Amino acid sequence: MSSSVDTAIFVKPPTRVSAYLDWLQMLTGAGLIMFMWSHMVLVASVNIGPNVMNTIAYFFEATYMAQVGGPIIGATMLLHFILAARKIPYTSDAQGVIWRHARMLHHTDTWLWLIQAFTAMVILIMGSVHIWTVLTNLPITAAKSAMRVQGGFWGVFYLILLPMVELHVGIGFYRIGVKWGFIKRSGRKKFHRFENIWTGAFILIGLITIIRLWTLPIAGN
Amino acid sequence: MSRQLKFNIFRFNPEDPNSEPHTDTFMLEETPSLTLFIALNKIREEQDPSLMFDFACRMAICGSCGMVINGRPGLACKTLTVELPQEITLMPLPVFKLVGDLSVDTGTWFRATNTKIESWIHTDQEFDPEAIEERMENDLANSIFELERCIECGCCLASCGTANMRDDFVGAFALNRISRFIMDPRDKRTDPEYFDVVGTDQGIFGCMGLLACEDVCPREIPLQDQLGILRRKMAFQGLKNIFKPKEKGRHRRF
Image (tube, rainbow over all chains, first blue to last red; front, side, top):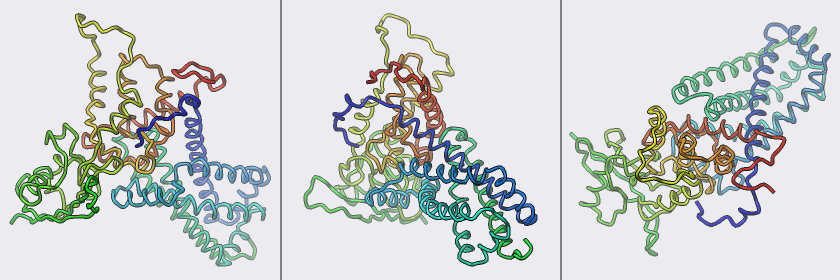
């Protein structure tokens, strides 16, 4: 640490900016976690029947929630990225530091953060592409989703995006819990295990859904 | 038969222009209840008198012998070799200035940080040496003491991702220290004043919650809980009077 004197101290009074940004980072994160889990459950409705998914999709479009909510979610994702990226090192020097640090420490929670940072970059690109594709091609129907997945390219695309998103939100959920003191020392292990199982369950539901869309007969749906 | 321990020890003397950072290997026979502190002394006595490392109390109270033990920051005196594999790699703590080999200067860092966060009781009460000591509830005294147990060994800083990346982050040590003063009724600082000290990205909002500090702290101070409490407290303090930001803290707003 530098022990030099901050000569700007008198022109820069303490502000509340850090507090606001930390709030926003957490709240946008929490919002997106809730959204992603709901999103997964709603898409998984195709496993019950294509008509169930179609009905749900129709509801969201008839109420304009998709048309208005979709871009809002996209913007929230970008905002969350900008806020959280403040913590991610940009220079290769600092990136080297955290990489070597993680390799030295053999510490799960430190690795989880690196996974969060890596998946964030993938989600930023692939998530944006996904949002654009879906929202410029409304209405959402099981048949259209199935067609996209069966094209091959999008099938692989979602096979990559699914675990990235679920890992990111699962770890984020755990991180908010321990960072904001909702989970105490005594409950951390249990919470961690819960988060692992929960994330695993969502990845499994997602895989089943992708397989279902891949095998769904398109005609008639 | 006892194990032959293999020690890989980081060697570098910044004072010596001919010295290059490298690793030296030493073999040592494991004896019952062998700690790293005893092992290092043996190596220095029997194999290499130039080996530099710090120790004073040999009982996890002075905080001098913090080092990176097989990747994890910990105290040499508190670590038994039986808990470790046959090959043991010792490195100096990162973040702090290297004195030589395994010895680092934690003192300068802690002094500067304690000054920065004003790590003392702030009171306008005049000290009266004749008066009976002020009373405090036992539970409160105990919970303050729980945080006061920190020995400034530096393991929390060395294990912290943020502190390794950013040299202006005050670390779990300072945040725990401030928590201790917040609890103490004798410290007359107000919440806005504490906010000025740690309500920043160099303070609690710089913490990313990786919890390595919690996991390596040799004194097992409840850092996870304290950091959580402090983050919530400071975050809510940041929202107070959000629409009239001219409240008076220690620093006047412009």
